[in-house]
Length: 469
Image (cartoon, rainbow, N blue to C red; front, side, top):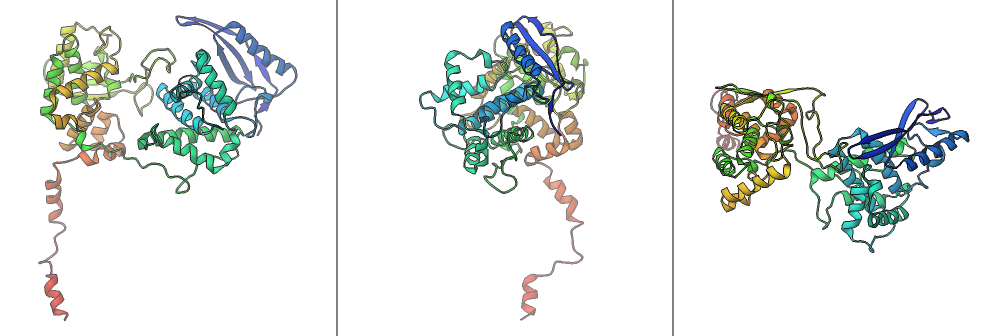
């Protein structure tokens, strides 16, 4: 089935005036499939539109997937990896989250550096990586690259190997080596390496569909360079005990201005097991807080912090639905009476109103990750003994969630219920916390001691051996 069609229709260029400037979007369709390309300058938009019109008037077929005239395409021998990577970024941009955009940029940067004809020794390595990661692989910022980074990217384009390089296992191995290592040549975190491999695999599958490659060259199964082994299990050493949590929260509460708010934020992770990006998104009306007893949190939104360069609206946080849940889904989480009292006190002391954030930042916006991470690091250093501070215990704010979920499991809450409260699937929950479940061995041993007993005494093996002589 061909993707080439002559049925091309053009619409009027759209002009959008926003607070960050004016954009001009050229709109057209190929065999009914709509396409659009945004520009910051009217002249650039009209030039691009004129190019498309000329191709259509000349009777040139258009590619339905890319929306471009077929003459703008290239074979594996003609198109470079760098140019293909940019096409892939532009295709995926509107379909993936901001966090995924960042990971894609990192993976493609590593692959691009491994697929150069020669080393860019005339440039600083940090500048080359920044040019590729922050500008070339960012559809929003590509046209905004400063002159020094434009020069680097022009050099990369000239020195990038063609897509046909993927047919040589030498280059495939070089890319995999780049994905699996960090700048100093040591092994990258296994989780990061596997994530980059998954991203690259999707990109190369897209290359096959676009006829830029005949087959996906990445090895499968046990062939080729094996992927790093990963373990999703929580390190038991990272969990906190109640005395440590109490000391850390007490120290935080004594901080001026925002200490009481950060204390309530950390307590929400410890008592309710929320992810940090879920806690920062909580609104006053999401918390049901009775005068006494247990309450509940109605969790329905997450606000992961990515950076304004990667989000569509330029904000540091991206509003997302809950992880692994359908759009609009809500998760009900029980609130311990101690946390109910803490949150009620926070609302009263800060005079928070319905519709507002439960944990606003100092300036009223979303609580920044840099703020709560920095405060937590200071609390650990101030409170924990030297040997504990140097250990993994509570090293990340996220370890408060791990501690909560482990506490629930260790005290007999059924895994299905814990998974529902935590926003996990049961298999993920069990694989993540299996090494942390303790305190149940004696009871489990008691359950199987009787059923496994043999009738009569177990034969004495030494006596049996003597009778056989």
